[in-house]
Length: 277
Ligand code: KIV
Image (cartoon, rainbow, N blue to C red; front, side):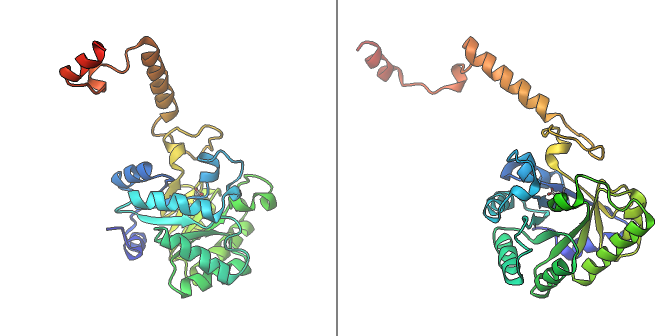
């Protein structure tokens, strides 16, 4: 059975860290789940790491639903969160509800929305009031890259940290059960974490957050287009995959693959008939 939101909420008072990773396909989700992660996020980062697009905002609702369905089939224990794609929650309330419901129907237990403007807060309230669990996301919000002017560290000054705290408090009041803090000094993330009741999940936000999230392709060393300094690599799948493919090509070319155990055989009687034909 998947972890409940209540179970995740009990971590903060117990000082137990929340572990979160992204996943975008069935088998990776299954192994992330087996590895014991608390929450799995089908992030819109899939636009970049899976589809090779330039921006996270290049993914549509229809595409997101396909990935959520695939991941959902692999997840038994973790709580599954789906990112609401760019422009799926900005237009109006009824479209926001419709889109969030579609992600829940595709297998997510909660949705994540970027931003905390009054308009977004209003839409989040609408979702939480009808019982859709929501995770907020503030600090650097990749869907707003054009406004933020690039991958810039947020909350660098005390007054900016106050602004981020105020956004986090608004998200909490709107009913979010957790908030992602992306790309900010650890002092800013600590200030926010200590002044809200809901858990903070950091990415590039230091060790004082209540939990951490990373992109799975980054920790597995599979995505190499860019690698932020906050990523820790736990495997080198780029090398593993490249080496395996090289060996496969060599084995096919040399005739080593397939061998006697890797093929099917006719009964002798049948083989003789075609050999003597
Ligand atoms: O899209 C994503 O993967 C995310 C996380 C990295 C927080 O939003």
